[in-house]
Image 1: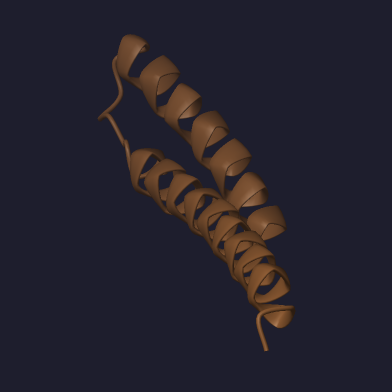
Image 2: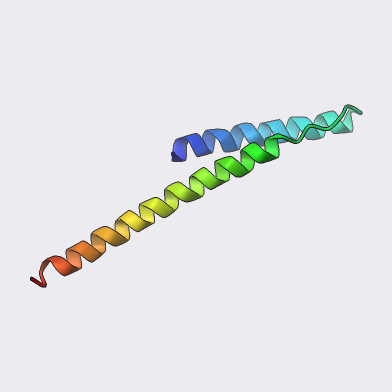
Length: 68
């Protein structure tokens, strides 16, 4: 999920840059790349959050393993 997020983030940045350049050139602006950037950032954030949750769960299980 993190890899897909990074790919979408990079493509969205490039698309947004192209939209800005087109707007400067006098064409109609197209900023749909911003939505792709947001989606990519969300996927990266979600992957990092899931990793942190898994580490916390493993730490909690290791701490409670010896209580029995």
